[in-house]
Image 1 (cartoon, one colour):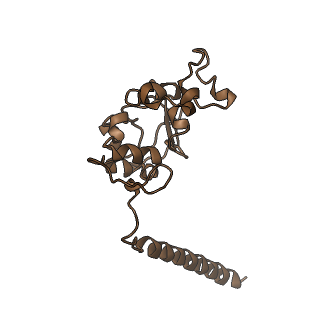
Image 2 (image 1 turned 30 degrees about the horizontal axis):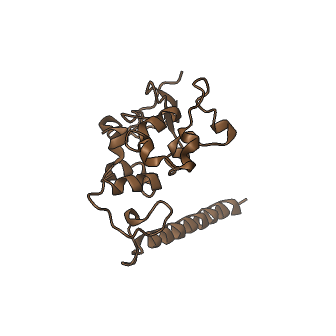
Image 3 (image 1 turned 135 degrees about the vertical axis):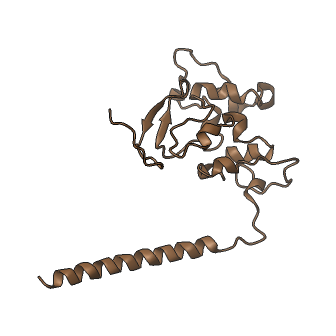
Length: 198
């Protein structure tokens, strides 16, 4: 089979050419400049409509967090809070150890289990400010034995159930939000040190 080597080489060249063409197209697309008329994301409302008024004061700088959590850069909940100078750190703490951990096995300073979200949000968004009919399911008291009681009947029980997509679609790490212990880990390490197998 003298032709086998020829076909393997030819196949590899074709695959390489396809990958190179795809990378070139992606590079050109990334370098295209945004038109000057394009509205910055921070001036968009939660529903994507353009805001009439620019932010009244300083805007929170979440760039430190968006280095890794780029998915939140355009997320509605993050943008609305950033416009009022409320950044990631206001809810999740400075999380210095988390930010400097290239292996991402150190949790953020503060995380919220679903049953704790409402109480934390209401520290700023008091019942008097948000007491409208659409919030009745969140404001209703739930059975302490079943904190998700309303959710089982199709009603929202936490603020983030309706406001924003403040969840990671794909997690490689998961921590217990109360104890902060690592409970799920894909084992990939940037530093080259792999966790011990149990």
